Length: 472
Image 1 (cartoon, one colour):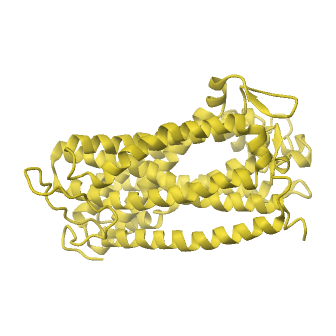
Image 2: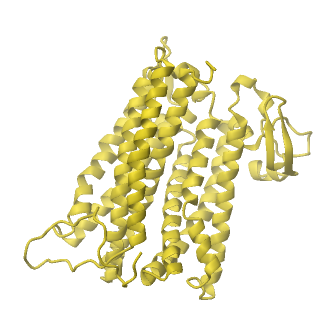
């Protein structure tokens, strides 16, 4: 019982709980900011009122999601000082500057132009407003750059020395920022954010078309969602393969946990692809295993007889928990394959001019609307749980990074407070987002550029008049 309520376990649960909520909203807004920039660019090129109406519709969604992302991010910074003081002390010389660069570049860029983007529609020129939207979109990318760089350094650390007190000291910032896993993880994360937003847009569009409301808006959004997914999903699979090869080189134990690969196969047998199993860590084997011979070698090494390091190559206390990594990886890959099949079916229906009329296809997009969020979380669990028992891979154990004087009761009470506050704050935010989505896009009044009072837009207000007469 004491082990179950230890400060270490409770601190890990608390951090996992907070980051699970936090990662959803920034990932969504990364894709949504670029979608807004695209929409406004299309409006500037065509002056089609429907593009303008779609811009304001998704701008409301962005404003609420951005706010919830900021709120959930504030809590995370507190935990470094309260629960993970040793991590802050030993790795602060590296992680602190990286996170500060994110604030000094991305946050200031977003904050400088967010107000213009949200409230400046009737205050500034069309081109200046588009510039503000672009800066916010770029700001989300810059933020992603620094956050992924910091996290990637913890996965594949380099460019540092360790002094006599065990403190990480920077030696080469270039090596720290552009560590071995950073390019792959940055591309993987940005594509994941784009795909998450893409499937939300496609799911919302399909929901409108199935209900017969906002038909023109639904057709336009679904068409663009299919077109973008047709590019992004295969590209994500390609990047994921490159990322897997990088994990094999730099974090072989994580890869072994992802595949529940316990022992090396005899020469020439290759590694099977385990489709399903129940990892048995006590006996160091898989129960109820269903596997395809040699396919694992082909995917993981690009050779039919290639091998990967097994879990038993390291002591048990050097391995991550196998089951959550194994299952989370399959959830992520399974959803990726489902996305690809849906996109291929949509392209075929588009070619037959049946994209907007196929009920099964539209229901598939509705069902897959949250799939990006689920795949994103599953992938994040693979990354974070898979590097255990280390918080800085190979150098600082998670058990040694927790605050030394923290007590379990304090962590448990703060966890309960966080869970209660999140239930109210994010419950209300998600409820409001659902209201906005159900109401749909509305007609926007023409922009007054000739005279009269130029009042700011109301980005958080509920819409009043549907653009095609359809209701919720």
